[in-house]
Image (cartoon, rainbow, N blue to C red):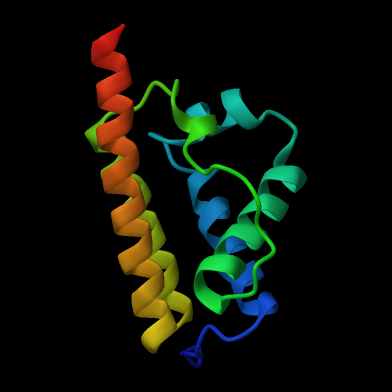
Length: 126
């Protein structure tokens, strides 16, 4: 069994992000959506996600931008957000323990809820 560790460094963030998006890229519900939007720009996307989670969890302010804007026109619904959260929680729980791991899951849940509400709003407005 793998030793569980705390989320404390940028390397921990990289592990979290890489494992999570590895699952997303293989997921039957999410893979095609991500592939269509990201294409062959995965290194750029992953780097942006490292900076985002580094800022959120480690309070090292390396991310600049608006997280929601790139997501506004995605063809997603509640089931996509549920799968995203499931894969994220699974990734955190398989690799990490402690307060930052719980904070990561809490922040991901709140972000997914907000994104889902905003996307539904824009989808219904059109």
